[in-house]
Each structure stands twice: as structure tokens, then as C-alpha cells.
Length: 233
Length: 136
Image (cartoon, rainbow over all chains, first blue to last red; front, side, top):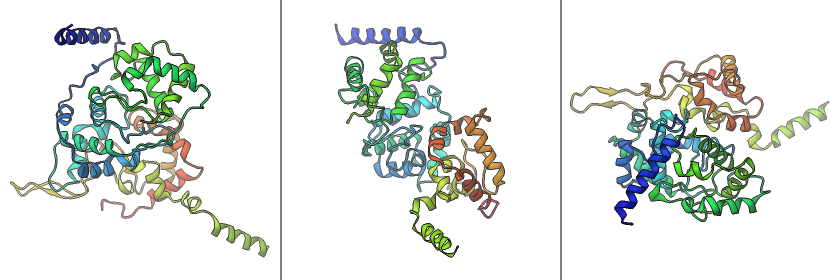
């Protein structure tokens, strides 16, 4: 099959998956947000990225980017810059129910917050590129919350059969496909997002993943996420 | 009695610094992430500097101007301490759950698993005593 045919096939497949989804599935997997698309093409400036992160993000995600123990704020440290940019775009598009993040993701509000930080204001797209580049350089913590550790063999098997293809052998994800690093992510955060993806509440979820995890029981979820939370990128 | 008093003071002096910090409203206001949305000293998220339009010479905005995204979040500085505690309790218990409180419900698990008894009161006490009450 030629590349062109293959891409048409993939396109068709993603549309059919889209129409199968719940009615409130507003967003497609890809992002159409212009600022984010521009940001993906820009080179991030780490120094500015630190200033932005420290002023705007670190209050909740913590200066190290390790999130909080209860999993309200995910670990961001070491996340692919592409993923960070896409998620901000998805929050803007209303595809993630995350009211806490709204005033930080909103383009106008974010612009007003960053305008104060530099002598020469920078564009919204550059802001996203800078902060995402900085986040990617942060060293992740392995001390995030894990599951109970009782069913790790089952978790490993499930991971191998269902997750490896996209999230990688050790939860390292794929930067160019916007598949996130999930290794050593907070267990409670993983559980919440997994349940939301399964229920269609996280509307930016990859349609393939929704299908893949359809049959997961409560026991399966606990086991696989416990396993993921213990992976090292 | 004297012995008891001596014991009391020595143990207080020997308490680890974290235990002393537990009642420090200012650091709790930061560590429980209130500051992210309600701004420095509970004054709301405001501009930190003046910016002048180079062409016209007029102010684009001034220090202390509120920033969009946070204009519908309350200023907390100089608010009654009792009211602040009541709202924190109502929001985190779920008694108040409509509209804008959704943003605060997003930090609920973190706050309830981190905060110790008396922490809300310490934050409220700190905020109610911030001076001056007007904008800086």
C-alpha cells in the first residue's frame, strides 16, 4: 500500500472512530488551535521558558514539575514539549474538563500574564514553545504516588498487550505523535484520566485508545496503572 | 507546676520548624496553591508593572490593573476571616459547588489530604490582616 493510500485509510479510520464516539465528543484527536500549531514550529527559549514556568505554572505544578502527591496536578517534568502544547490547545478548545487550568491556558489571559514578565512582550505561540521546551528539560521524579503493588504481573501483561505500541516499552510515549510520557506519572492522576478517557469525558482522548481500553475492568485499571506509575522513562 | 511550665517551653522550643510553619498562613496560602489564582497577598491576579504604548505615550495598562481570566475570581485581602473559613469549608465539602467554584474543586483532593486542622483559619487570619486594604 502506498503512503498516500495508507494516509487516506488512516484518515477514514479516525473519522469512523470519531462518529462512534459519544455525542459530546466535540474535538478531533488533532488540534486546530492556530497558536499551538505555530508553537510546534518554533524553537523554545529555555531561559524565558523558566521565567514563564516559575511565575505561572510552578504555583501548582511545583518548581520541579513533579505535581502534588494527591494527583490533582500531574507531573509535567520530562513531558514531551509537543504533548504539553497539544494539551494546552485541547484545554483551550474545551476538550478537557479542567476549570482550574482555564485562566492559565486561555490565550488572552496567558498573554496578559506573560506580558508583565519581559521588557519586550512575546507572542502567544512563542510563550507555549518556550514553556514546553523548559518543561521537557525538567528531570522527572520517580517518587510520585504508586498503586498498592499487589497486581504488578497482571499490570505488566496488560501493558505489554495494550499500551506498548503507542506509549512505548517504558511509558516514554512518542513526541512526534503527541503520545505522552506516562512513566512515573502520579497513580491517582493516571486513574482519573484513564476513567475519563474510558467514559468519553476526556474529549481529546485518542479514539484508538478509547477502543483499546473498552474491556478493562476495575481490577485491570488498577493493575496496569500501578505498573505504569512505576516505570522509568 | 513550675516543672510543667519548663517542660512546656522546652518542648515548644524543640518542635521541628515544620510544625511551627503549620500555622503560618502566608506560607500555607502559597503551598496550598491559593496564590496561583488569587494572587499575591490575596489581591487578585494583577499587572505587576506599568506598560506605556511607545507610539501614543499613553498607558497600555498600569501596575495593579486586574488581568482577564481572573476578574471573576474574588479578591481575598482584607476579607473577614470567618467568611473566608466558611467559604473554604463550604466549597471543599461540596455544599458550594456551582459556577466558578469548579476551579477550586480541581484542587480539592490536594487540599484535603494536605491541610491540617487549623490551616484554613491560619490562611484566613493572614488574608484578613493584609494591609493596606486597597490596591498597593
